[in-house]
Image 1: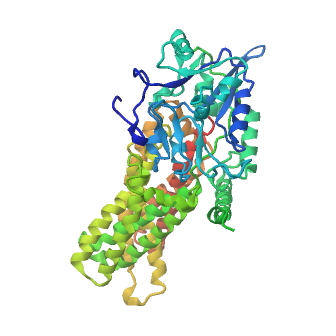
Image 2: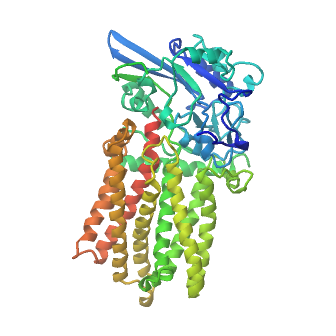
Image 3: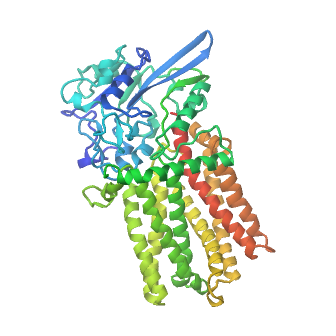
Length: 280
Length: 308
């Protein structure tokens, strides 16, 4: 795939190129306790709306009692070297920074959500109206940006600084002396869904199969998770932009038609606000 | 990866949304119906099948009317509706590797081509109608082809990510367009004088065209089904979703049984396949069946992946 360039000014992947920076992250899952400090820090700092995440922690359990094991995995944008979201964005709102970040320009984004459909990692979300500060961008796509505002000032991303177990390691992977390069070269690392061809740049150490597998995540939901999912979707007031939510408690003919009608009513009911918001 | 047995359960995850939903399904269905109607419209004036000339003007106008609703839905579905013009700012904003840009250009030019075609059909200008008919039919096919491509070029969305996707979309468009046109022509017959009415024989002929489309659609779906059964685990999950899971109604019952198999049987029986109400019934089933396809096609992969 050498020679493919993406996005704004056709920036090629910088990984392994001398004289360039390539920020990457290693997550040592053996040290992750699943405390969600990263989620809290990120959510607070970036005013991420309810129901959306820039970083979140997936948890799974395997084995039979008493021999059980808990697997945790922080998930975020993988800042891919071959990002499908950048390729599919129709307005160049999302682009690849020369230093490896995949970034979002809110003033260009039209909120068509193509990038979210293109992303294999569910790393993107739509900023809804439900933001603490109404001056913040709304109704456009957003994602984890490896805290570029901190990194360019010489600070580590918030999730890394808040990590209680020291599981997250961030740095320039092109610099052989950086901590992240040393950790990645000294350990066996895995990336999520490598078969998608996105060349993700978040390296996991000690990744276990169930938690990294979308199929497992779908078929092996705990009953509680399943209920919470349906309750959340049913009571979610985000229907205006997200008219595709389906809950599987009622999927007979009338169930599907009912959900479709409900979602379309939401869609039309919130349409005037979308057009005239802020004008009156 | 470390060898861990695959028994166990997920206990915490983010609840991701399906970002494209029913509005987009309706949009796909409308664009398809428009393209299908326009194909029928050009049969008489472009391809020289004289018996369809009487339907051309109405079919073309139907296609235009359906396509006029499309931008309204698309623009309303945007997070920032007033920024839709970003799609048309060439080349500073438009990103040509994104299929949505190709589609924006098609959706902009296709109705203009159809308007010219309708104009020349109305004034019976054979030559110009032919020229604009050819241009508009290419744009019609492109417009619907791109909707398939928009879904196709998402590598992680498994049932969509296959080269059969745009062809499936086009075939669905073709049959749903004819089906819808049949019903609309029958309704129109109630309001126009006898000289301008479309005969049952033509409705029957159009149903025959639809029959070929149904057979081809089933062939494509069978190919896709085969690929999914031999696929990786994620494809099996999609198969589970559409056969036993939440999308069994749109896929199995509405699209396959109601939208393809029953109409196929009706249109294959010589005693009834030219009778008015059987033809209309089959047309209605096909049109609604294709809507079922649009629903599961847009949402099934997002529903599955939303749990990851």
